[in-house]
Image (cartoon, rainbow, N blue to C red; front, side):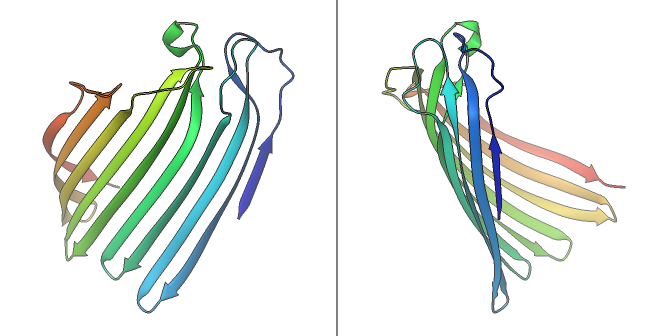
Length: 189
């Protein structure tokens, strides 16, 4: 278990939003069930947002939880996070922006001899808006990735993978997404 606290530095409030005080708590628990090692973790954090102008409708806060299970060569994990944050003076526009969002990640990997197979997904959604107003349309990002890694020699692995990304900004599809194949190698000394 862990906990933390930070406090205000005493600076005067300004037009640009800033984090004043913050705290957080978290815990991790590991247990076994037969041949499976199960790890469960989670945390919560919160902070006060201050500004001399229009205030945020929520403070900066977030919670997350995750679970992973390892049975021999098979590993499965899933995690979820939800929270509120802010962007001070967003892109130099003198507009403080608050963001309310959530994200889910899940993945699985399997090792068989010199080969590791892996697949993972990430799905995130958020609403952003200026301080004092409510967001009405979603921004989202959904990613799926898969890879095969082959241990060629000690410290050298070959990798082939695929990634698909779909994104929406203010409820409309963007050109930022797409798909890609990649081939590469990793070396460790």
